[in-house]
Image: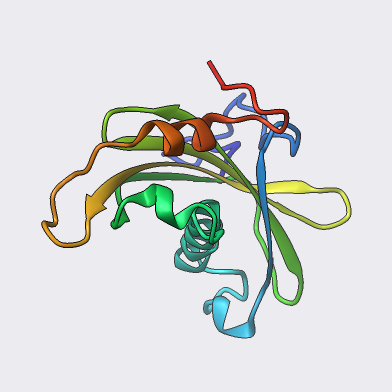
Length: 158
C-alpha cells in the first residue's frame, strides 16, 4: 500500500491521485467474488477493473475501424495500491492516454471509491497494437493517434 516502503516502513509519499484530468471514465460494481481471504478486494480483481477501463477506450463502434484489424496487448502494467477496497460497492476508474508511440500507447489510470473519491489504486499500462492476422506490432494510424490524444475539447496532450 502507498505510504509504506518495501520493508513495511512508513514513507513520505502521499496516498493517491485526484480524479481530475482523466478523459475516460468507467463505473464498475464490486462483486463478492472479487474478495480474498482477508475480506478485501484482491489485487488481481483490481487489475481486472483497470483492464476493463482500458478496453472501454477502444470499445466505441466509431473507433473500431481506426484500429485496423488490431487487438491490444499489454506489455507493461504497474499498479500501486493506496488503500484497501471492500465489497459491496462501486468504483470509478479514470483513464487517460498520455503518450502514443509508433505501435504503442501509455495509459494512466486511477481507481476511486466512495463519496470522497478515495484513490484506492493507480496504474500505468503500455499497450501495443497487435495485428489480428500476423500477431505482429502494428503502427498507430493518424486518426487513432488523434483520438487517443484528444482532450475533451479535441486538443492533443503534449
